Image (cartoon, rainbow, N blue to C red):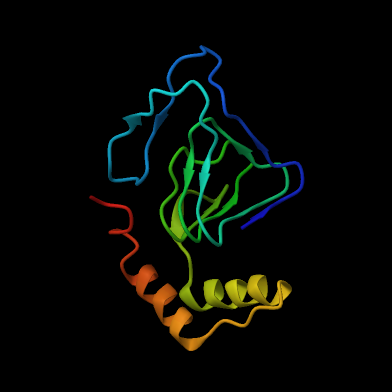
Length: 132
């Protein structure tokens, strides 16, 4: 993951009440019965400078968040969120893979063909990720 400079997160509601978390956009939120619950952030998630992430948010695998408003409470897997697409457009698979390769290379890790294949399979099945 890469959190842009000045990305801020919250782990406590203003009401001091129990935090609800929605793990997938197609699922209902669930009560964690916790007062403190920061965001859940998946692999290869990126945020732009100044992104604001609410208590109990779930940013799913491969999401790219570049919104001037708050990040979504629950992002779509491999969703590309901008002010022009605040509901998240599907991330272009080839662009996602190129970015993921660069993220790994920065850590001196090479993406194997097998791992690339797994990521591409996840992208094809993005609507099913995290569903029960």
